[in-house]
Length: 319
Ligand SMILES: Nc1nc2c(ncn2[C@@H]2O[C@H](COP(=O)(O)OP(=O)(O)OP(=O)(O)O)[C@@H](O)[C@H]2O)c(=O)[nH]1
Ligand SMILES: [Mg+2]
Image 1: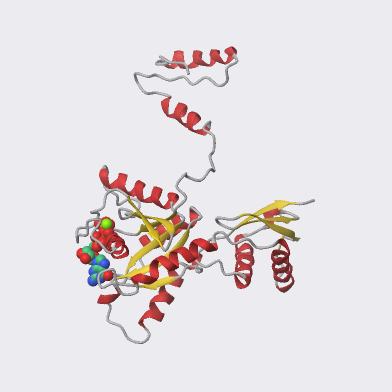
Image 2 (image 1 turned 90 degrees about the vertical axis):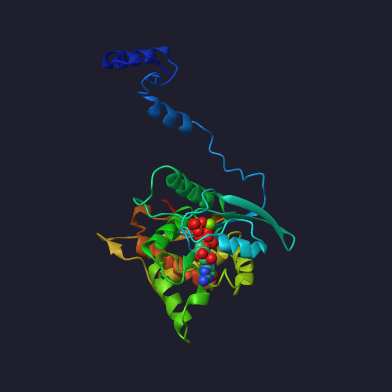
């Protein structure tokens, strides 16, 4: 770190410090703040990447969704007591609240979060902070309960949160709340499910529950479903099972050729779980286009559904 690098002249000279042989010099000014961002980036990049699980071994379930959809009401129903503040003013819960419970002998942490506002509509200050807390809650969780409001239908903002859950490789259950106020006929639930499947077509493996956090309707199904989805993260598929799927899929529908070249997957193996991650060896990984990988994923899910859980393919070359 080369301090007091205030003028552009000094900034240039700072590079003389390369000669010290102590690695890259960072010209900064502690007074003016110049260069400190780069220094921080480099510092953070040098931290060891810890994959170690938190000491807390409990199953972590985050309750996420837009403001006012009923996240805190759901938490209260799950706990059977008024633990977090329920109010009709959007954005009441500013911080994530962790509640540890013992569910039939299993340690579970429920994380109630502040609502996630759509990007660009976040007020500065506290609102922004609470959004970051929500996204962090998803990162800390194993399973996210995505609570949506039945009275408004699924919005772009809900889909955005779902996208974030998927990007973080977390499992999800969609909870359609306030089902008590919906005027229903025989088809309402089917139509609503269809609507969700369409809007969240990148996540068609998620289970959907229709509940009322107010009346308690089907709330008793929420935790069993969340825990079932969590177990799917730990499923291990044998190499032989996986290769049968890969072979059959390619026989049924070979990868389309691009400029005369065609992806050929030779074999695969599950290298990780939580979530299930498959290493596939192929002739040319760069030929693995999204649509074909999606097809393979769907074929795999026909054999093992991985309810509510994303699965990951990593394609490597084998010459
Ligand atoms: N009719 C009906 N109203 C509900 C239901 N669940 C919640 N509400 C109402 O919706 C409003 C918001 O509920 P909260 O539980 O505070 O919502 P939240 O998602 O935690 O809101 P923020 O923390 O502010 O993001 C309150 O007026 C609740 O009474 C439900 O199932 N049915
Ligand atoms: Mg709340």
